Length: 206
Image (tube, rainbow, N blue to C red; front, side, top):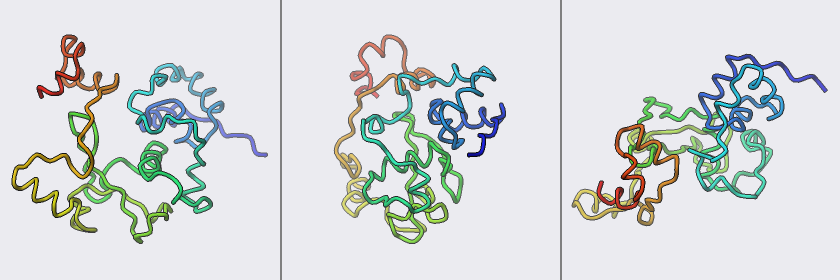
């Protein structure tokens, strides 16, 4: 078995810039966590990228079920239809298979309230189980509408244009704030220590 190649400081810095944890950085570089950890510690970059609280990592990824290697899905060795599209979309971004921006216009603005980005996963051949690299891309709402079809249903559009209360295409938004959300509000100057004590009332005010 060939010996793993050394990792440069530049590779590790780039991987950390694209991920939210050391585990994510190791996946991004397609190396074992142990191999990544050895070089990250050598360059004194390991401690600064620790994320034991899971800040910025969606709660739906924190489960005990074993996920297959994403490479097996991307190369068609594992049927993707059995897995949650939302999880796969996040992993494609987290592990570096997709840039988190519109593939046409490079749009990557985030919503202040929850730091989400309006990007939709598009399958070029309309086969939602085909995750091969040349078949998937992220599109902003504008380019998805122009290139693929409607983003909202006719009912959604009527509610939006008539200024009726509208919660999107799902149930009402649950504004439960975690530590990551609170930190983002503070960085943007939208929350202070007093607001943090009663985050739910703060959200209702804004």
